[in-house]
Length: 372
Image (cartoon, rainbow, N blue to C red):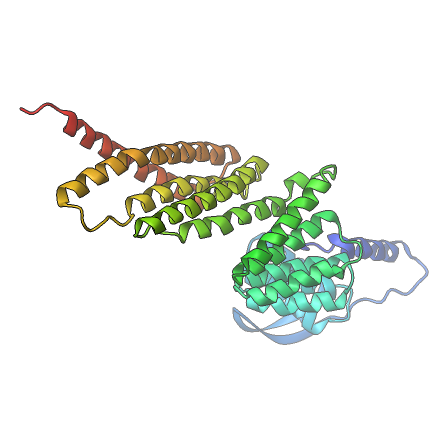
C-alpha cells in the first residue's frame, strides 16, 4: 500500500496554512506575537527517562530529522510529545499524523492506529482525514485485521471526503477488496477489484492514473483469487472426477493467467515483477500437480514407469514455458532496478527448473543410448 507522508511542517494542507501563519508573523511589525510555550518535563521514551525541554517547534524539527534518518522510534517519541503536551498548538495535527506514520514505519501498526484515528476525528471530512484513513487501512492489513480494514474501506468510500478524487476511489475499492479477500469473501473482493478497474478504464484521460499502484494491485489480486482456486484442485481418482478436475483447474489457470498478464502490461514497478513470478509459478504448479496425479492401482510397476515417463514428456513444455517466463521476469526486474524477495524467488525457481530440465535431458539421453 502506498505511503502518504507528512514529514515536514510545510507538507500537505497543514503545510500551506502553517506557511501563511508564519509569513504573517514574520511580516507583522505592529502586533503582539504569541509564542508557543516551552515546558520542561521528565519524559519516558524507548531510551529511558530523561528531562527534556519541550518546545513544539523544536520537537517537530527533531522528529523530522529522526524520521529522515529512519530512526522511526525516536521520531515517534518527538511527535508524541507534541500531541501529549501541546495538543491545541498549531503543530498538533501534523504531529499526530507523523506519530502514526513513524510508528507504522517502525513496525508497530497497532500503536499507530490510535494516532491515525485521532487525526481522522480532528480534521473530519478533509483530504487529510482521508489520507489518515488510508494509513489506518495499511495498519490493519499488516495486523491482518480484515474486518476492521473493510470497515475503513467503507469509511473511505462513504465518501468520508466529499471531493474524493477518482484515484482515491480506485484506491478505496482496492483496499476494501483486499479486506474482503482476507475474510475469504472472494466474490465481494473480485467485485470491488473489478469496480476499481472499470473506474480506471472510464477515466483513462486522468493524468498519472495509469501509474497508480492500486490499479495494478486490483488487477494482480484478481489473479491471486483465481490462482488460489487453481492451486486448491488436485487430480484424484476415479477417472471421471479427474476429468472434471482437469477442466476446472484449466479454467482457473486461464483466468489467473489472464489477470497476471494484464497486471504485467501495466508495468508498475511494485506489481509487475510479482505478477511475472506468479505467472511462471502457474506453469510450474500445473506441471507438479499433473505429475502428482493419482495413478490407478491396477497398474503393474512396469506400467507405472512407462506411464510416468509418458506423462513427463507430455508436461515438459510447461516447465520450458515457466523457465522462459522466469527469465523474462528477471530482465524486467533488472530494468526496474529491483532486488527484492520476488526477484530472489524468481532466481531460485529458475535455477531449480533449469536443473530439473537438465536432469530430464540426461535421462532421455541414457534411454536412447545404444546398448553396449
